[in-house]
Image (cartoon, rainbow, N blue to C red; front, side, top):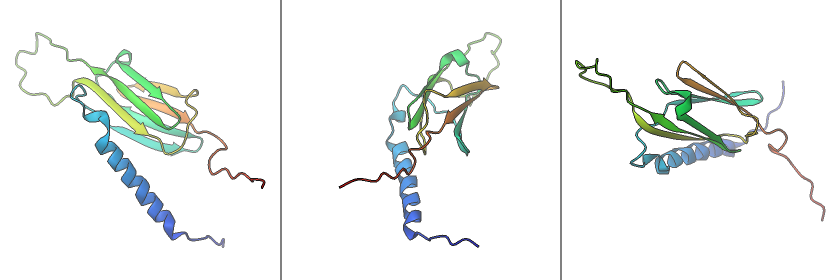
Amino acid sequence: MAIVRFSPFHEFETLRNQMDRLFEDLTNNNYRSDIHWQPAVEMSDQENNIVVKASLPGVEPKDIDVSVSRNAVKITGEHTYENKTENKGFYHSEFSYGRFERTIKLPVAVQNDQVKAEFNNGILILSLPKVEGDQNKVVKVKL
């Protein structure tokens, strides 16, 4: 049986990070009047990669822009409304149309020049390789 050190402050750090993310979402510029909706996203950790999935039903790949920094992913674009004449009996729509934008803060630094993207059936999948080596790196300082 291994002995594991208990750090009571680790839980507080986790709580602080979650609160920071909550307030970042609330104060983000995503509430601009020209931004009509935000795509739903999922983020998972898969060993050497962070995987981000965004739900973009009805959006064409040519209408999506993705930019990635070491610590965040920004997905922007537009879902245009098709005004078809055969929809004369159309009563109601809950589909989201117009400009969209979503910025996702990443839990770890990624190699933003090595990102792989797929777009299938309205789902954007980004595979973001983690930066190796600089996580919790300890450096000896000479006096």
